[in-house]
Image (cartoon, rainbow, N blue to C red; front, side):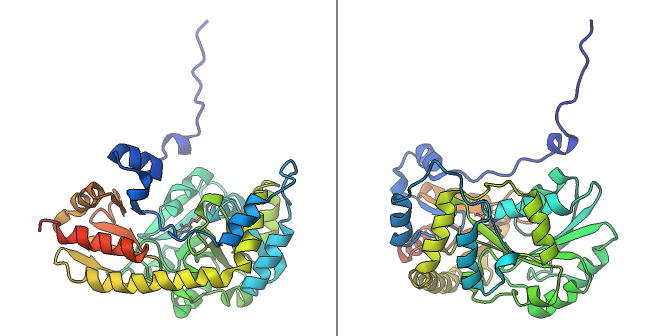
Length: 363
Ligand SMILES: *Cc1c(COP(=O)(O)O)cnc(C)c1O
């Protein structure tokens, strides 16, 4: 009998492009043949200072690990309600804000729906929607990476379900203004305002969540709070969307460790904001210094990274040059960003190391 040839994978999975992976510190250290502590890992916008000691202490004394975490995330949500001033009922945590992006798509996308992404932006906005049956409609930003509002409005169709707006935008570092959000909110489309770098910018579009029922704010503990390894994201959602997310989320999506870390980190927010301030200062210094190199054009940033255009198509060459000195920055393969590198702002020592390495780039 002839075997029936079955197509096992969904077409959207079969066709999915693999995301240019960011390697772990261990993998990079092995490949370069240097100890991990010598590497300046400046490719993922992580926070070199890590979490407050109180978070580590709270994690070290966890008990009852045989019990599932609170599916309602009550204590962590109460701490976040206090921190953000948003109503408890509108707050939901995810296993990283990446999970919240998936949950939003799971809740709103029907096959054939469209999602608008002003590009360049965070790669996840491009890679995840097709897996939920959505078509991604990219709208190029202007030369300075500002939103092209008219083009976004023109891209809206009856099938448009959401628009991804990162503010500050990753990797370009610029903000969405209140005026811009106001205009886009009037399209009626659900706006996902990703404020992963809010604490570095010090400015938020959160007030819009009080006036519009189509504005979502996403945040994360991965960057400002030094907790990327624990996977903690949260959002402030319109009531209808919040109710939908409770229906689609896995009951135990946020671990006991993550929920405890939220409380402990927010209790020590002064410690964290002191480090955020150090990073902001180093960001401003790095930006000033980067302007001295004739082969670079750095873009002003409100986040903890700086995007640089590398002239003469030499971005990947510069990436390799830095790597030889155990400095890892982000490079890109896609059509919008292949001439750019994104440098995470680390400690003062790490900034010094980058500048020294740039001084020896043959140009
Ligand atoms: C880093 C980043 C995230 C990811 O956050 P996690 O909470 O670690 O999943 C989300 N959005 C943007 C724009 C980011 O740069």
